[in-house]
Length: 370
Length: 235
View 1 (cartoon, one colour):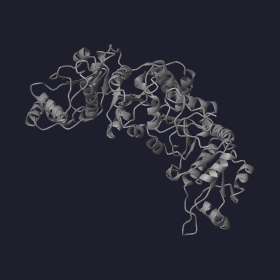
View 2 (tube, each protein chain N blue to C red; view 1 turned 60 degrees about the vertical axis):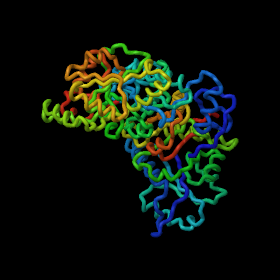
View 3 (spheres, rainbow over the protein chains, first blue to last red; view 1 turned 180 degrees about the vertical axis):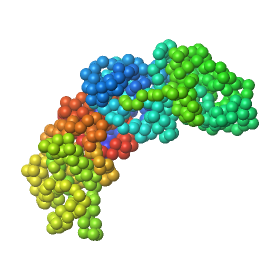
View 4 (cartoon, each protein chain N blue to C red; view 1 turned 45 degrees about the horizontal axis):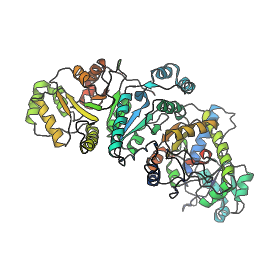
């Protein structure tokens, strides 16, 4: 099916269009035509248009981490899928409560608001896409929930059980957050930065105005090569190896690209003199130590042209207390041990199931299903 | 439920090679098989009628029937018609869905209130084990003046039947999959489309709200056998 040539709609409010009431069907225009017509020239407080995927930093979030769906999960597990669908439709007008990814998404929106102020025409923004394995006819509850919480999510993907990975790739997804480790692993093998999120017992309050993202170093930002040495030969060999290779860059890890994307947006604030007031802040929280093994990490980051706002070298000390001070909206680590430790102290931590550490992980099981 | 196919390509062995609509026919057959498996007395089934207006093919009607048999397809009726009458034929045979690669035929069908769908080369590479139908929530509707209403009613009635068939199967492992794509609007327009489908008795399996993102990649992934848009248009 081909698109018809551009037709300008007359007298329409610059809202995202529903189907037009004209007699010969919708007179939709091309993407560019629509945008020029209604966005700035009418000066109305319209909902801003979602950016083109290639320009935006696309963050795909699964419904199970954006919202709390434990009750529904239980219905699914205990009573089966038919009952689960019936339950969802019955409760269609009851919005879900916020889940572990909710504060992160709200913070992304806050950054977008600041970016729009400074660069009204730019499409270099965060674009949040909702992804769910749910069947579409129960998706209405998700739409109602998005409305209820006033989230700016205009793109979504309800796959009715099939894998969303193809769609994530089509949308040039920069980060995928899900509750299901298998799906996350699938995304990682396809080259999409991804992490598994869990609902912590408590969530400490995080900033509403500054997005804070914390990363572990090895097997997250960097490859797991050094971890392999450590696991195979122990700490001394690890130090030796790092010293010998101090000037050789580490290979990149699955989340390097996301840090890069954050850095690009940060530079847009710096360019407008807002370095001190930047609404994005990044942290490296690593077990490496500053005096020795940390040097290689820093050199690598520098060579990649990536700035990280704060680098915390713990030299093996527990990460929990440090993270509690930072209060990131999300913390990425490849080891469940650290993810669990962080969560115990109320930090929202996400597991990146990448690299050698996965063979040595705790017996943590994520539940499958929707 | 009755579908018409038209046309077919020739091959040197004297049999017609699989045309564009082959996977579609196989998928329709699959649906029938599964429907009967669920309920051997099922009456809501797909009934496929092959129509051709090409006189060359009509002269070789045995070749067509041979080819059909050779490829294991189940066609209940053959209809040889000339170009002027074939629409009458569609109406007389109470066709619910007319599938063709010929744009003119599709337009003529629409004008007379027969739900007419244009197939393209993508249909040739669609799955054979599952019928995949895509509803376009805010697509451009190509209808001539006056035909819109009749065509829309035909679309709604077909959709309702399709929804009923889909309802014979559970959420997973269904031989029919119904997807909705809204291209330009945001979540509200997709929500509205879902509700409209629901009011027609169609429970969509998949929904993609693109809000301006490119449609091509999504359509390639979905691999629909055909697209429907009339029942979601505004008039």
